[in-house]
Length: 248
Length: 338
Image 1 (cartoon, rainbow over the protein chains, first blue to last red):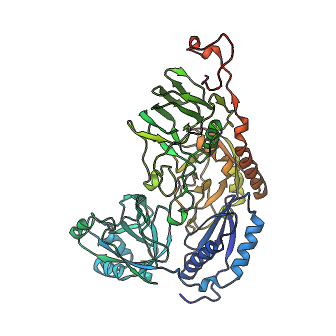
Image 2: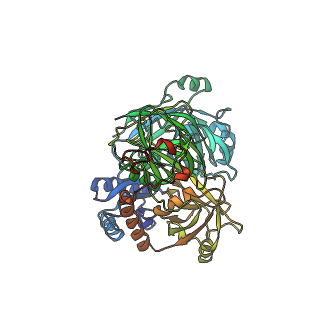
Image 3: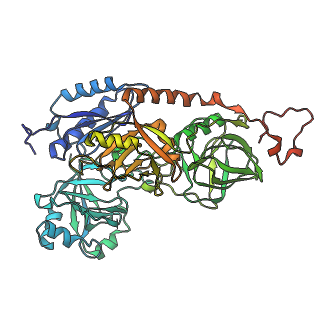
């Protein structure tokens, strides 16, 4: 995590569409690049420049959308460059107000039928795979694709397994799927190339709730194995038995 | 004054839409909102009200509606056959929908999305700061028979105005700027992309539309997968089989397919409105030109209200001719016209 040395890529500023800019801290996912993106996004929000309409992060980048009537490309690029030069973003701390979530999950069974396949790809028995996945404390690296849906990482190296070339036509809301040393916890039913190894009862996005989104980037998550019967009992709880603990 | 609009009958996929909900990308919610934002601006201009008010978006087919009190309405976007109590009314125009009268809106004659605007806007509940249904995110639902929609306080004003729409219902050429991954495509592929006559595929929806062509798929150099990055409406992602797919208002917020370019927001209505099979072409332009076009279009939309004109009545299309006071030859300003 701390190897911020010769291998560290140089941040790159590029345009996104006509009214957006992206500051990328790497061309592939790494812990320092992810932390840099989160910290830079927080700094952008703090700066709240006139004409900036929205900031967000993806895995290794911070995105800025701006109003073309109040800001131009040259001025925004210059400001981003100045902010980038202010510090070593790769050495940034994680965001404040982080929480550790413990979320009950059924591994395998007919609820999560691809556990055997995922375990085999990782070179483990099913029992070893469950032990490894449930022992891993993974971090919300970004939220995206669908509402409230986290990309969680980084898993031990054995889980550097490819996504399937054949898509699974539909996995349900609350599905926990694994590939490329990451877990995705699905907020909506969707087709996917990730392997469906676990199933939770958690609802990540509740449009009518006071706090519609359960997870924030920087939060940590650990999945606690439960039986299908126990999970059934948790389905009445919108949080699906998930419990949070303050890390800050 | 406020009132209600009752849905007596509706086509599939009819939803309430406004300018969408910016600011939630961070949480995986794309902005959404009307597929054709220009149509929202046109409706607002016709009714002399803010473009942020919600309207009814009708993909391909309208429905039948009834108001509980006199209601100003405007019809914009894909032209559809419309009538009030069986008397045909003009599209791209504002009208008075009298209390209890039946507004019928039929199939689109061209284009994809028609819009029904009401004085004061549709006032369904807000979620995350907007009324737009975002079906992919599980926010809101398609309208169905029997739904009663609240309408907001109407500032009032005249009806019987028309507005010449920018023609965007038959496909055409849309302008594109380079995107994050344009440089992953060889120059020859980019040229072929510009030279190809595409057809809007059948599987399109509010999330995006596939672009079909007779030639081979488009291939980037080297790696097929790129790190997942932010998506903006207009991004043209090239999926595994080489088919370009233009992402629209309700797309996912991030994507790992390479993007060959991004359609200018001011040209997105052409893409959203292209009916299945309509011919579309893409042309790359420089960023400076794109910025100038966007600024000019923003200004033009703000000035749409001054482009509205009183509808001229064509007696041949007036089925209820006898009900009008013809002696003076003057029509009261508040009266609806055909």
